[in-house]
Image (tube, rainbow, N blue to C red; front, top):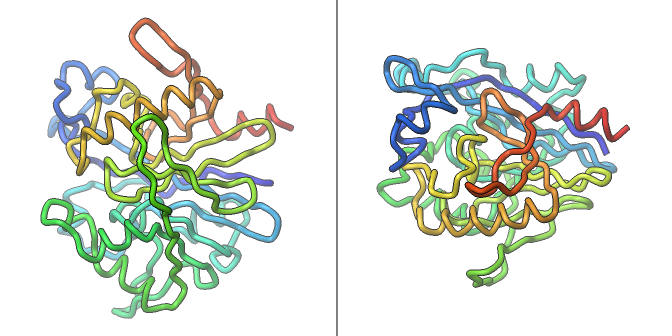
Amino acid sequence: MQIYSIHTGNFKLDGGAMFGVVPKSIWNKTNPADENNLCTWALRCMLVVSGDRTILIDTGMGNKQDAKFFGHYHPSETKTIAEALAIHGFKPEDITDVLLTHLHFDHVGGAVNDENGTFTLALPNATYWVSAPHWETAIHPNRREKASFLKENIMPLMESGQLKLIDIPPFKSDTSLQEIHFAENISCIVVNGHTQGMLLPKIQYGTNQIVYMADLLPSVGHLPIPFVMGYDMQPLFTLNEKELFLNEACAKNYTLFFEHDAVNECCDLHATEKGIRARTCFSLDSLIQKSL
């Protein structure tokens, strides 16, 4: 197996929205805001080569929207998926699967290109995977979440015939998280607090279990359980999911891979008097080097 961090750039979001009810005097210590109260966040994807499958997890924001749209998010150091893959010697045509954690614009935007008004798939040979309950949420969104689902990011996936929905079997437990098989050495933890049916890919890499955190834990600064985004649709679900996940991750020594932390790519965990926190932060490359 080979595994790569694919960085497609940074963007900015309001710090208060990213930390919900937590006061700025607390979150600003870990995620300092600019004069407009905006914090910088990464758009970090992951590439996993396993057997005959080359799997891209999420695709970043893309570049289809107009200047007014991007004016809200101040993208910087941006790369297309093709440019980001090329750094590691891959082409868009090499990708066999795109596993989308969910369909908010900063996770799926790079999946579709706009070629002079015609929408085409950025990874033309890939099968695109989304959880079935999340797909229903995206095409029939509630009024609060609707602005995060852009039809030009979503409908071309279905129209291409290359979209496959992942069935999520019925599951109800307040004491454990649901986990489903995706591919050899890759499973997905299913969470519903941020949005219905979000997937957290868990990759078995040698003796390491690496979890792609998507928006359950956008950054190291979100490790304290009450630090829940204002963007989450069901924040009380998120609270429970974070607690269950962090207890499991600490007990089983998971490596957390952050999609949005602009400074810290990965961390491991330990229990402290204040709760479970990052023990050490490190790059994915350093973990790979230790595993060789």
